[in-house]
Length: 171
Image (cartoon, rainbow, N blue to C red; front, side, top):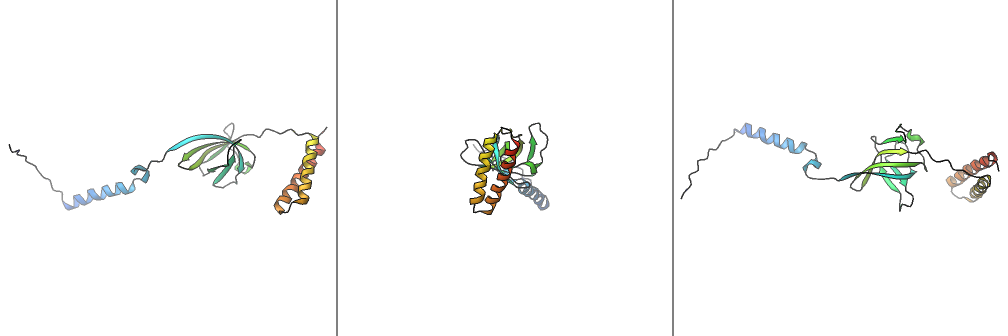
């Protein structure tokens, strides 16, 4: 048994075919690579830590976590928001080493991109007069023996701080 199939072929004019192909190529070329098959898994995470290194305008925030194996490196961008615990903006120039923070970040492959950094008010440390004296003596000794000029200058500054603190504290 032989099937009889009547097919009607429609031919496009060369200008119409060119227009369709041009539109298809434009769509393919204008579609981002991520939409063409590359999938990047992102997750949002929060990390409580202490600032180890950050300079205003820097693209990197380094923090340490209590008991963590190594410092954590976060990418910082213009979209990264720095706020206090109430949500009020924080002047980034006040973010210094040792400040406790909570970093909200998105993991993009191996990169961790900080989206929000909540800066906590440091808990005041209470120190006795005898502890201030011991710290003053330590930094005085370090200032005398340090070879590196930066280390020597830091030790002198710490010595002056603890000297003043010792005078202000009562027994």
